[in-house]
Length: 350
Image (cartoon, rainbow, N blue to C red; front, side):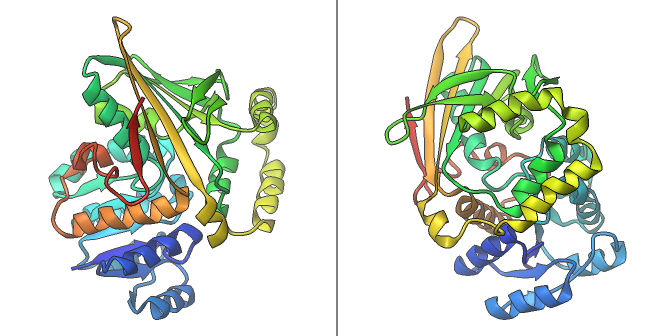
């Protein structure tokens, strides 16, 4: 038995596969391009099972006999359904590295199917949403009666093509928060707040964003009111606010093509040197109905390196028999301390 890493030759997928090899995970690589699969497999000394997501028979053949799929081919709004369907057909555990709310909600809706099939469905085993999910669970444990959760991210990292493409596809969709247990749409960057990200970073202005935890933190903690923020440069914050007035234009195919062309012209992702300098900080706070609060911060390495470490580590846990059937979140299945003992990942109560 082994793990199948799908989309393994993409930017994030390659980092994941390299980390999987480094920790000794038994895995195979897959994707729609046989030549690129074979090249990566040869370099890492593993097997290759190429398959297309629009070919159910071929996909089933690629998944035959494996313990779990670690799905790295995004944007996941377009790719999760055929892979989850195949996993349910064959009794294979499903992991992915998405951060897209619609994917989390879509996979969660298949939870009963997964329970009947005896498999685990766990989207978001990378930078989205492992550190924030663990932080949310930690804060919930500190203040069990919490009714409100706020988390804010600050990073100096650069974007890969895949991340930028996902953002491009959603730039016209607006934001959202969770209110009284329901996901509620709102304008893009509907609120701006200042958060203290701690030593070396300090106070930064952040806008509210539709980060994946609007979905997942609810399943992990049961906290009914959830808001997520991102500390961004002033120009980006102003563009986000202005985008509310031109949403129909941003959705036009020719505008989407123009934005994608700019993405494609950029490097595939941060260089190793840029990732070595990359860091992220997350501030989180919870509050209960009486006004009591608890807060904490998480700091760690570049987000893409974190995704590689996190997803490979969780895949190894699943391959070792530690999966929990049904829809799961990382901290919900493996505990709030899942990532806090990893090298370079620090938790500090504020």
